[in-house]
Length: 108
Length: 108
DNA sequence: GTCTATACCTCGACCCACGAGGTATAGACA
DNA sequence: TGTCTATACCTCGTGGGTCGAGGTATAGAC
Image 1: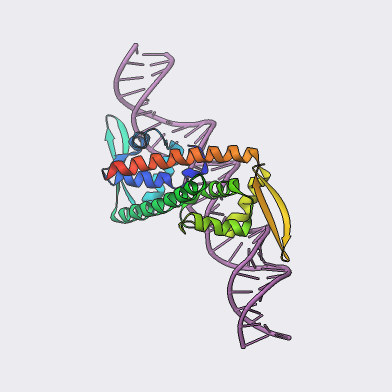
Image 2: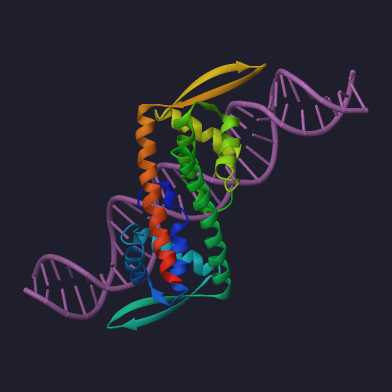
């Protein structure tokens, strides 16, 4: 939530979580909060459209399952999705390192 | 350049540079490349509209100056701009730390 | 019977990045 | 004189992503 700095981060975090094991939407929302130590929360209006887009692009695979009367959509990462994750990881590193260098230089 | 992960980063880097000393557009573009160790380059189609927006919001002050036959627009940070920079710094920290925690947890 | 948590979803508004393109001057080099 | 590179400013259209608000429905607690 908050700020333009979130752009693209949702995709990175989702792919990263799903590379470990398949999960469903609501579960992912909670997992993002916990793995980022409450630093980042992805709202449902970001979560679901993002998952649909990633599926359409062939990076995620979806399986509907009914558990205790509720329908869940489980997502897993395809091999193309793994390549995408690797790319986003590198991109994130590059940008985070670049920003760190620039900010660090100013008060050092 | 490249990727949605750049969103908001331009503003942060610009405010950060201008907090040190006043600079003009073209100079800022070069400074961003060097201070980020070539990791980040902000194109002119991002740079100029961003500077105008920041000025309109009262975070930057602009002064036109003619140097060696060329017109330069020098920008400096207002006190509101300094508060904005402090906010963006905290936001960046929060998100970068959150992403780091999430990514670190997966391959640790 | 109502309230909370789970579980999915969409819509419209808005912000920002980006490539492509446009204008103009200074200085070098032929 | 002509051209090329660097400087220095700018806009426009497109598209991607976020976000708040809202909508539907079931399970379980109280």
